[in-house]
Amino acid sequence: MKSNTTAKLLRDAGFRATPGKIALLELLENEDKPLTVAEIQKKLKRKQDTVTLYRSLEALTEKGVLTRSELGHGHAHYELSVGKKHHHHLVCTSCERVEDFSDPSLETALMKAAKSAKSFKSINSHSLELFGLCARCS
Image (cartoon, rainbow, N blue to C red; front, top):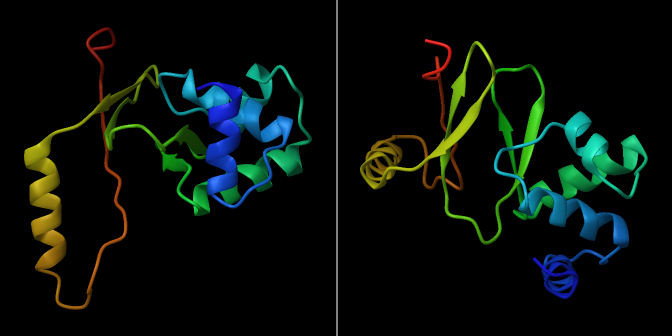
């Protein structure tokens, strides 16, 4: 994503297009897996205060710009959701490798399950993480 596109995305979501937020989104766009806050801080060329970074991540997640995932590591992971196809994660319990996957038949089954719920009118979002061993670790 170019800075102009990133700035427009931020403004459209109701945020000021600050250099810190632009750098954050551009970093996450170029990653092939969700990142922890510590990984984000380490990789950001433009250093940000930890509290400011947490606030930005949570605000961007609330507006649907980012997706927050719990991958069984005891802390949150973040990835860009805008412009990316909906997916789920396979997580290796040995080396912590994360791989994206999507399956249209799984999505159909999840929506069918949600519709059959007696106490819910609608489902706004969902996530699924599968845990096991990658080919290298098994």
